[in-house]
Every structure is written in structure tokens, then in C-alpha cells.
Image (tube, rainbow, N blue to C red; front, side, top):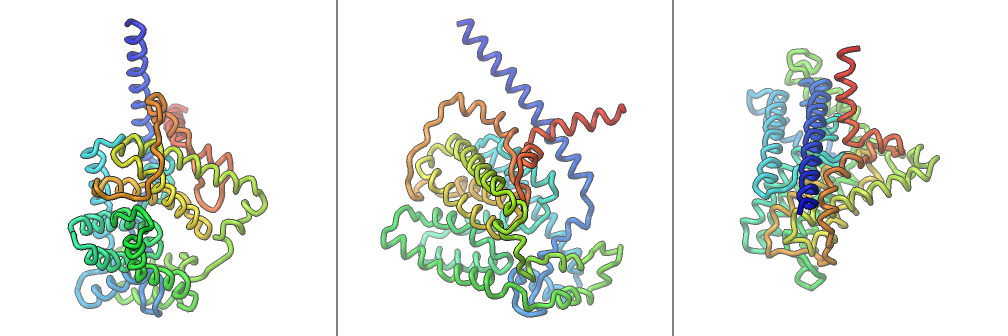
Length: 402
């Protein structure tokens, strides 16, 4: 009896130590964010791509913003700033509410492949925040509709809107939409559902392959915003010339193709390391999701496998690896939260993990790194471990006395 009591005391002590480490990591990430943050970072340049120079991928939101600004007295730059701040607030509200309401273990958010590292490495203030909030809204609307044909129409309309804002939305949300539609086999009824998502797929292909912006002069887009004020003015704090730096929007280059990136081309072992790293994160997420969504465990393996197939697919041609992991993982969690219990995905084997393994997952996550972008190496893997933020905080404190 005393032995069991001793083991429990040790577990409590370990949990307290772990909590201390997590608090320090959170403080360090906040300090890093405050160190690099300025108001100009709230200018999401992707929101300013528009159709003034011709039809181009990712131009819908900017065209709506441009039209609204031309026909009202509201400054588009300030409007976009307010919109971004509101979106961020909503996103954090949704995350906190979801984890609290469904009693999800929050340590997953500290993973290198989740929220905190995205913030620490200056990769949070992107269009991704709008992705996630819109996706949650889309799921809410779909769940309120009972008629399957109406559901399909709404899915296509809402998805096309976001695909025209960023074509990658189709990839990240395709399998979640199948889950919401209860596509759990290749029956004729389910094949029909998949086929009826074809309009979204066509728009995705057109935006990704045909209207890629190679024939659009980015200067036309930049100049279209000059009528709303001096874009170099300190008063607005806006530098729209940054749009021209989004060269991958306007010009395809070999450097984003994974097998043509120099570090992978010259060191194939690093490319293997990238895929092993991806498998490691996949296995960790699989264990976490099975623990926190036990009622849906029979669908989790197949669903997560499909989601990670998307990560691999998009990483082959786009180098923002941190963003792809973060987007996929948070969308996967929100899907499992919001999908109706009577809905299913393709069934797979149930994963039975011993409780001892679950206990140690909160420690293991601190030592899992990931590819930052356009490369992978053992050094980068160590550099992106969440535990590094703990030691960075220690160095920060020591520097105050040296």
C-alpha cells in the first residue's frame, strides 16, 4: 500500500515539475513574440492581392476589400487591421472554449507542430488565422443543415469563397468535409457525395495551375492601393510593396520544390529525416487524439493519415512547413470536436495505448522538433524542440546578471 502511495506522490511531483516547465515555456514564447511584434506585422499582405491586374489566385478577399474601400469612406488599411485583430481574438476564444468545454489536454498546444512555435518563430500572423476561423464557421453552418443536397451546395459555395482567397484551403479541409458528410465507405451514395464536391475541386485546380499570377504585374496591384493614401506613410504604417516579395504568388520557382531544394538535393539523408520527423509527429498526434477522442477512435487513424497525406503533398511544392503542420493539426482537432457522433469516416483499427504511455506524452512532446521551412537537419530538429524555449528563458535570466 505504501508503495502505491509513493508512486502516486512521485507522479504528482512530476506533474508539478512539468507544469512549471510549461509555464516557463509560455512566458518565453510571449517574450519572443513581444520582442519581434510591431503593428506592421498585422498587415497581412495576402489580403491585398486583388483582381485589378487580372484574375489571379488569392485575389478575392483583396478585391472585396478594394471594392468596399472605393465605395465607402473607410480606410482599407485600418479596416484590415481591425479585421485581423478581431479574427485573432475569435481564434483564441475558439481554442480556449473548445479545450475547456471538451476537456482536452492543453499541452498539445505547446508542441513544435502546434500553436506556440508558430508564434515564437514569427509564423502566426498569416492568412492561416482566417482559414481556421472560417473553417469552424463552415462546420457550424453545415451541422445546422439536415438536407444532404443543401449541405453539398453550402460546402461548395463556402469552400469556393475561401479557395479564391487561398487555394490551399481545399486541401486542408477536403477530408474534414468528407467526415462531416459521413463518407465512411466507397458506396454509391458516398461516391456521389464526393463527385458533387467537384465544383470546389475545379476552382482549386484553376487557381493553382492556371491563374497562378505569372502573367499579372504585381505593380498594378500595389498601385491600386495608392489612391487610399501614401503607402509609405508612417501614419498608416503600411508598406504594400511587401506584396511584391510574395514571389511564389506571382512566379513559380524551382526552389520551393522539395526535391530541388539545395539542402535536400545535396543531402538526401536530410530529406529522409524530414519524412521520419513527419511520421514521428503523426504517431504523437495519433496517441493524443485517441486519448482525447475515445468515442471516435475507430476513425482517427484513417482520418489523421489522410490529413498527413495532405501535409506531405503540399510540402512537396511549398516550403512553409511549420504552417502546414499547425494548420493540419488544429483543423483535425476542430473537426473531431465538431463532427456529430453519428457521423463516421473510413474505419480502421482501434489503437490501444497503455496509460503509462499517455502519462509520458506530456514530456515527450517537449523533445519533438520539426522542419522550419525549406530544410531539415538534426540541428534544426533540436532548435525547434519546445524545451529549447525553457533553456532560452534561463539564458535570458542569466544575461540580466552578466
